[in-house]
Length: 118
Image (tube, rainbow, N blue to C red; front, side, top):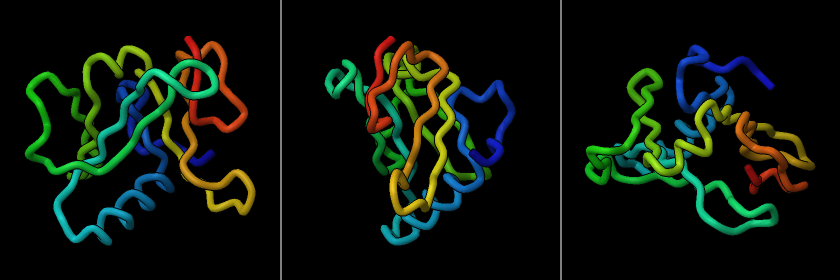
């Protein structure tokens, strides 16, 4: 894993590789979007990660916002309780590549790495 771009006090951390990939994907959308990260019930282990671009106008007053040189990562208050300290990384490996979540709050993680239990 590459080094996270922000200090350990950041609620959701992103590696340089993840930031680069997200910015590239956002550029293809041709809009000023932020990245919403959260959790929902379901998945192999009980809770699964969700991540998608959303319009900046959808940011709510009670959302936590993390800034990466002008790019916003947004998380709702309920989700941040489960993923505070999460490190989002990106790998271009042929097997197991894509976005990877390292969650310090997960008691167990499924084999696919996209769901967890606390």
